[in-house]
Image (cartoon, rainbow, N blue to C red; front, side, top):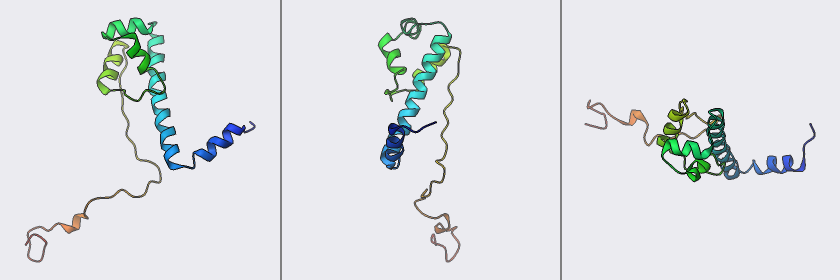
Length: 120
């Protein structure tokens, strides 16, 4: 497939770590919104009908399904999942090839109360 000017531009922009992080977060929000919308549609519900079941507004459901919305609360996602007979799973995983996880002090810095240790 031939690369477009946009593909080239996006590849260039993704070299910027701040842009890449924002782009990834937007993708995550988009993914959550798409999942909510797909589950709602599979259940045969409109946004208004789902809102009624959740005792919230249609506008709130629209926000939850929006790609730009980043205010998804775990409690609201659980409520949506329950009504739509689904489950919520949150995965936090390390970033590949990330160097720089730091601990305030190395564990060997702490003594055990023995003579010559830092606690004595």
